[in-house]
Length: 607
Picture (cartoon, helix red, strand yellow):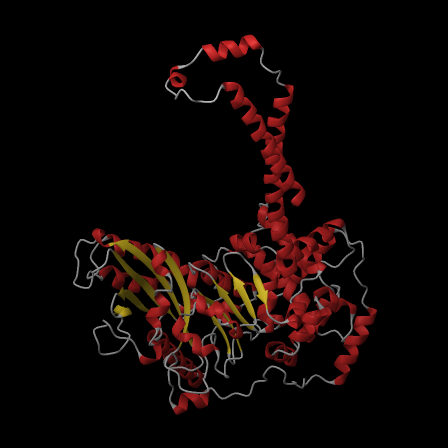
């Protein structure tokens, strides 16, 4: 016992040394924009490069870190927030996570101006580099510190930044971030409810898109909404932020690249691990009896009634959500082995996307060149208009949401719009619903090919997903077999499977109009036509009123004409003597009205 106790104490000491070397908050930085030198690190605590003062120094592996902190197009905004990821400088299987709070203020607000302040505005960002992806938690505190840092009007005074570094590390401990319930640190500030209301059914489409591990670019400016969208959707995959984000920025490029750090031979050898790539066949160690048992259970399970009530559907989803995701294999390895998640990427990193070692990615960008380089992405998403552009027809079919999927998304939207006291509609409730959906999807993916239950999730999507490394690795472990007894009471179908209704037709039509190219063109044509027809109708109504008034108004009598001709206003008396008589004016006006009316009617018939 004493021997084992000594080993335990030694391990604890080693872990303490590691934790002290890697605190939750690694660095606090100030990145400024210089009119001649561009973006550069002006201050870092502790220094990014050991043995320096922490000014104007940046490691070679993080050469373009300043361009991530001050995003492209930031000069158009007074403030913005950036989430970004970096590869670790020491460990090729670890990532570093960053939050940058950007501000732009008039130079007149500065109490002390330095020689480099030569323009009417000053652009700087206060950044934090972290060893855990707690973006929202740090953003809430860092934005307040950034505001205070700018309000003091003296950028040479950095005591407030040193204090926030110490205070954040005192509040955040490794036990809190890796303990029993660390989600409360990872989910702060993600605004899931706002994202659901903005993206609606498309949030489920992006959720399923991540499972396919394709190349996705989300562009927009300012970048805070697109960064938040990427992290929020990733958080809907159970335990991804807490356990599945270690390698989101790790990549061993096929050639040396300046944006990426270079590792020693020993660290590269530690990285060697055989993993299947997309398209490779993974042989499961499960015996053939397992497959026969699945087919038998598939045939003997009682399918969900076609006229199932809404309460029964919600009960099924609630039952699925009650299972611990760790027990059924969460998190899936979505972001590893060349599959990157970079909430924001600046222009100097563009060449990284075309490297053969990069298999897939989900990135955010604000530079228009990412949008113009169409060959870089399988899917382009506009963060402002929520437009999703899928290049491949085959991929478009795989990402098509089924009627059951639309019901599930509509169920979430309705509860978010009308939250209840029982926490329905809250952010944690949203995550629980996607957790249940994910378990149902995993169960259906193990059904035999051609099973009708696969159509509920889109059979083309399931077939494509089964070819990805993340599904093959999960299927090889077969974590559901250990819970077969408890899962057998829940139908192995989509939680929202059931008979069609008029509401389903409305959902399908609305989704088609909003997401297909032909639907968008039809919607645009309808809007344009309605404006044109509406304007023509208003013109015709006005012309008809004028024409009708000329018909219904009786002609003036001779006495009235004589009175009008003799009674002149001062303005009329000042007119020239050769002016036409009033009667002639009336005839000309009537003729003009008839001409206008004819033109308006012609326009209507032309439309």
